Amino acid sequence: MVPGVARLAGTTLLFVASFAIACDSASEHEGCIDPADRSKPGPDPSQCPRSTFPEQGFRALEVSGIVRRGEDPVAGAQVHVTPAPDTTTLAGSPPFDTTSDVAGFFRVASSVPKRYDLSFRLPGGLDGRDDVLVYRSVGGRYLEPHLDLPVRTLATAWVARVDVRLATPLAAGQALRFLAAGDGVVGVTGDAASGLFVHTTRYTATATLHAIAYDAARGLNSATAYAKVDVITDAANPKVLALHLEPLTGERPTPTFELEEAPPGFVPGDVVVRIGVGRTSDAVLVSIPWGTTTSLAPIPNQSFTYQLRATRADGAISDSGETGFDIGALTKIKLVAPPEVTAPADGATIGPGDLLGAGGPGVIEHVFEPASATGAGMHIVQRLGPETPLPDPRPLGVSTLAGTYTWTVRSFPNLTWVENVWGPDGRRYRPFAISPPRTITIR
Image 1 (cartoon, one colour):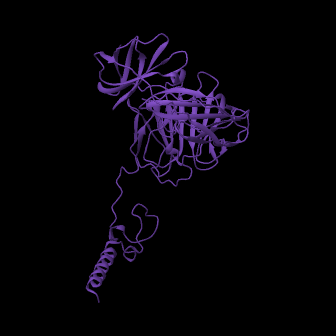
Image 2 (cartoon, helix red, strand yellow; image 1 turned 60 degrees about the vertical axis):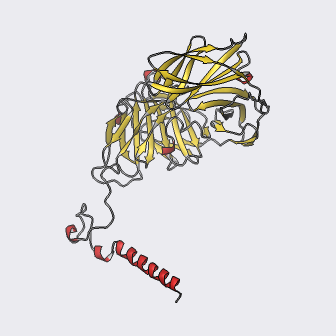
Image 3 (cartoon, helix red, strand yellow; image 1 turned 45 degrees about the vertical axis):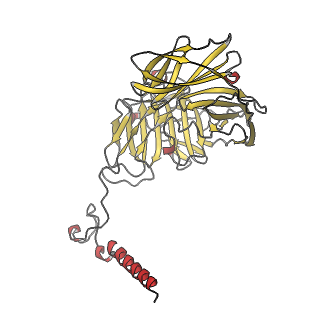
């Protein structure tokens, strides 16, 4: 035998032997039973050989996360955990209840089943009303459940004032738009005349400010000058910033959008193009009527996204979500079909336990908006199965989930699990569609 081959064979035999020794032997555990289950006959578990596999830590099945409404965490949110209907449970399983702390953090320090339903009551929402948020058949151990708002907000943060001094005054009719980026920088509000306010997660932070000069009557896409400058912000002491604007001289790109795929009967609206230096510091650059082209201002150091929404006569919506694109190339857009809603019918009266039927790929979200200003709103995020029961809000301490509601169903076909609907970005950058609205009475 060739010496190299002999050495290889010996090494292979040694590896196989080591592998065999490391494994549990089935014959050694013949007749042994789970020590926690004494309902079956068998030998004393203490006489059985111990498994060579490590035991699972007692915290492995805990559930924790941060509850958010918009950009902010929600303090005092009631959290309720129950086994998912498709989960086999043992003694000591949920329901479990806890409350989020001042930072919105919650933790269920118990052995939660591998699949569970996670429900929340978020106090003090729109007009001071409660909101109910339900995630069906969750498998993850950490989740940041999020309730989106109809308008964008900045997270609660430190606010530092910055006074701007322009090297050259703006021409008549000109305006300035500011964006802000940096480690711990949330965004910027205010204006050059009355003062800027930089929002940060730290008492002091280094912010990069982007200033864009444009014709106030024609909008941001008429930008003519730009500046970028760093400033160290301080929540207690205002700073003075000298700003020198440079003319924009680059070539204006002209993107082209093509509707490659759309559900029947949907009419596209405008293509909304945004610029930004961060997910919480952006601005609408221009809205382009569908079927037309418009050149874009050559503003440097920006990311560009587009969003196209199409509507149908019955109120259904299909939306591309905010999607990045190449400003110098052809962009092909695909719009998704709305979910097929099967039950209940428009005008029906339903109660806890009654089934909500909607079919579609990916993740489904049922949205109930109350007609009454005092009624609680509700979102139900689900994936598994075409039907889900209407939750019983009483374990969450909600007594106002009743009356007349507008019910719509959102479909996110590109999402796989309910855990994907996570945080403020969970819905924002995803294509989605919304079913025609129905009027439902909850008893």
